[in-house]
Image (tube, rainbow, N blue to C red; front, side):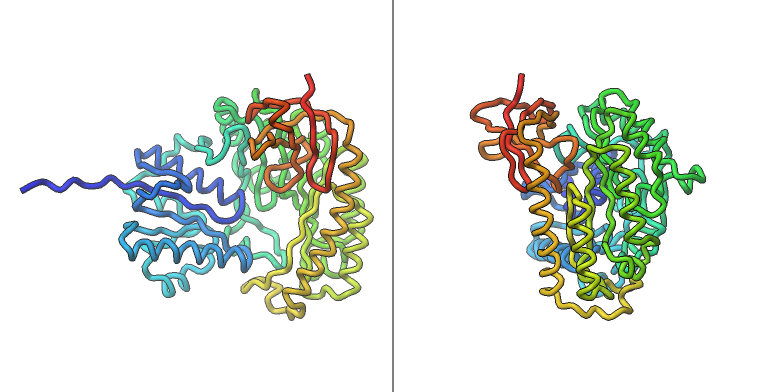
Length: 437
């Protein structure tokens, strides 16, 4: 009798949602491969027999996309195309019991901090020697670095503490080691991320220690750019701006989600600040670094946002002239503080308000970009797309901000390299440039 050949498992990790989820998937991929398991991230090959879906549970659209993806792979399992489907991440953390009842075909559900339990399914161990090492799922020249996990903030609209738990900072030494490893493998830009980056260090060092962390990371040889994301405005540590000013390889860029421009709505949101304090903070930051690019996000249609409060936010955007702005519509999330409040606006009304804000921002962005025409900037080349090499200045983050487009028929650029490029033309969200030298 012929012996049956056992097919070796091939694992495919699918990531939904934000950059923090992407980091989690990269850590999982690193641990699986470190245990000798054949694993890939969003592989297009059709020969993966085990699927791990890292879900997002943040707002309705993201939840639906995660559920649709789970159902797609459960269907593939029923057709015999895959053997096992595992689900992890925020949606799984938040709705585990419901999901187990509704989609029993999934082999196991895991929460956001269940990496060792996932590895057990593969008879694999969590390898501590791999801490700080991470296989990147994109071009190696930039890398997200998660400096902390979870959040202690009580914001009315946000379910992240439910899904991610309380704030836990990673030690400076561990992060410096990770940065050194990244630099040795070709990473030139670190994007610091967290649920709340300005809270960094309070648990470990009994003080806000983000400035020291950034200073230490700026010492790592080979790291040309360090970019700060998700800086909570209340209790903002201004020593961060001083370090940003002093260290040339820290980008003059700040992602600071303000969420609203009306004091009454900020109070309802439980943000612990006022419109006046937010404006004062932005002015102080710009006084210290006039050329800084400030990115913020706002929420349109939160409970308590009447026409007057919305107009206050319109006025806020017009006067503050943020270099970068994103607007979300309010999503009524169960188990959040705002869920007990009346969600009085329709989705169409919320979207209309978001569109109004973005129309104002388009003009602001256009005017600011026109001022860049004729100036030369250091540009990091991210990719080649169509007939252009696509890059970014230090004032722009990956995927969410402006791009610099360089005509590939006139100039050759290498992905992952820096070039000096002179801006020749500008639209609302794109700069066209010629390489100098």
